[in-house]
Length: 530
Image (cartoon, rainbow, N blue to C red):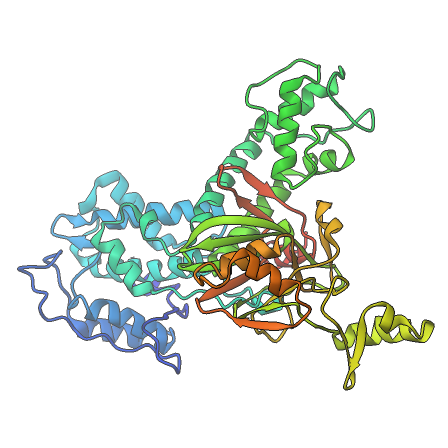
């Protein structure tokens, strides 16, 4: 095997973060000369000049080459993947990890046929299968391969421009060198304990494998209803097919081949409806049948799209933070990284999408004015004033310079309190007088801001460490009719995200509608238009 064939994939531009300076260049690591053959993991070392000759022949970016240099410099040019017994344990474990990634992601772009030949030889002939003459080539290729793997598996596909997909949460940063160093030290074992991905990623990955198994066993067939709805007590041949469909996805716990709509099936239907955010009436009607009939390949792609998004977010957010999941119509509150409560929200319509971004909560504003946005003023308020000269007074509004604002009170569109996290999108969390909308399963009704169902509870949680803000004090401020800004002292990050597939705390796989079409656009880039 020629050395020239070895590095066929090395032109990849490696990604580095903590090693980078403000100009994006990789900072050099100091050579650790304390590492010697007497105390090293491996007694095998190579000459740094050999590495420089090799790097000079490659088309990789300076950042990529420096990443490679830094890894070996901090090891004093000790081998990472070999020891005196031959190929080391971490090499095999890493290769298994990569094969698993290719299998579940369907991404074969990182497949390396040269290394695969050596892996096959090692699996047949043992760790000594790679001769000394080929050892250094395989060593460098494995390191290169790890960088390529980490780029895809932990950072996400960089061909996907998050901003073009209307995702404005900055991508997480990953210290690839630290990750590789840990993998080598731990011999590739228990990697889940230090993988730089959100735990939700692994949960979805497990569900994806289950759905692959369902597809391999024939998937599910389209259900052709003979009536508009099926409910408890019905007895029809197609009910047997419905039961099998729900058994495959785990909603029906025990296989049942009878044709009667019994209590067990009713419970299974409710479980299915719960996972899809539907009205849990236990009746199989048009909406429930529509979701049941989505092809298995559609659900697999939906899981993969959401796994890709999850690669972009922090692995384990710490401290207090808020997650608003737009398709779920829910806000989740976390304290020191642990969930404490959730509540329903109303988000923007399909014409007025709520933006996907992140910010820091800064103020609780009691008895707020609502400063009517210019777009709403032009499209809605001014035409209404022309039709009805008393419109402003009837809606408790007033001119404020060249703008219109709504006074604090029961008619105020923001309710009795709002929560500001300054951003360029003019989006915030707020109360609402339209409480009836929280009775709907699908709650995309706003102009883009996020209405929350339990504003007082949220205010109490934010101000919980300030003794002066008792329940009575919050009530007084909310209903005073006098606008009051209260600075938020602790650090609370708000993530406004978009996830249509996730695994809940009970281990159930949830799906939601792609209300803004973001999944469809992203799937087109990931899988093509077909």
